Length: 267
Image (cartoon, rainbow, N blue to C red):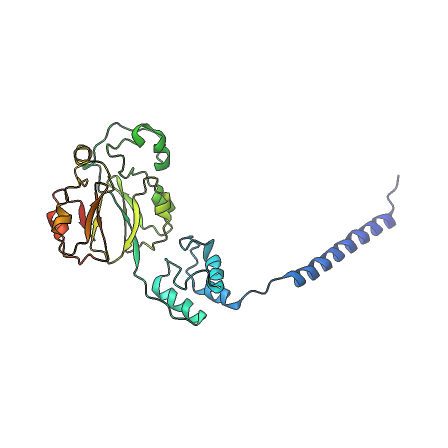
């Protein structure tokens, strides 16, 4: 049976015509329904770093730009860009940027391979979150200590945290305070502290002194010597662990000097 050329042409015309009509209606609908964007959003997105790390709490830099224009986020909402970017965003928005202290991540554990005890040798998937399902939450004698398998390292987009001698250590010069490492740590060992903070407590154990001594050579035993000797009243012991109020700390170093376990570290 022969194929009708006329039929083919007619079918092509119908299909093509239908496509043109659909395109016309979609275009018209798009023009009618489109939402005019504030040009400041594009301008702010241009000056933001473009890392799309989510450290600001929004879905990427464009999300933050939109939130700033809507008044839902501060002009200094980008932790990666810091003060220089905040100043540019503030200029676009026609406001003054408040000065904020630079923050960096800090790992509250000094239990290196040499200092921390082990209950057993672990052979398995090297993933910190997975160790929640093994005996005692991992091989380290201290259940609060860094597991050392680098979930935080994998999340950092700035190569600012590395596993050194069995524990995570932050390079404060490279850190952008995006907070990804904080969310990645199943032990909740990482916190943001001021870049200028001179002294920090490198321990998070809430165990009593005897248990800490048995598990780690550099764990806080809640002896309160630091608390009693701080002239500024900037350090207190709560839940068997010392805490430094960085706003009160004068950087005198007395706490670090007096600590018998050398838990309080410099810079």
